[in-house]
Image 1 (cartoon, rainbow, N blue to C red):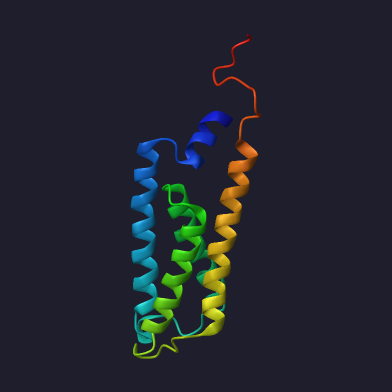
Image 2: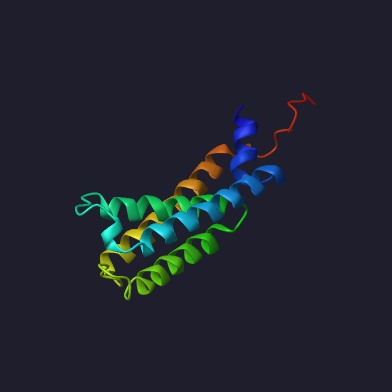
Length: 137
């Protein structure tokens, strides 16, 4: 069980990397669409606004990392996506665009996902000197 999970999160298996990559692209599209929708198409009060930024960008960075993108690149690319989306919001009706708190929540989400994935990978590593198929000698 642990070996299968380790291979799943490490990106060793090509079929899983393709799935993660497809989900990462879908996540980017959902985040961009949701971020660039005019405010008239959204609920008036979003008390969970910063949490949705955090979770959305954590999802993008985490899926990119699972797809095999090196974690620093996944994190940095996701952060730049967040900055770009915030700047693109400026001309969108009813949006404030360029909100530093949103950019911070986006970046913190990306960093949290990269750190969590790295921690999971480290926790699932095989101890050095062990054999892959459990041989005794």
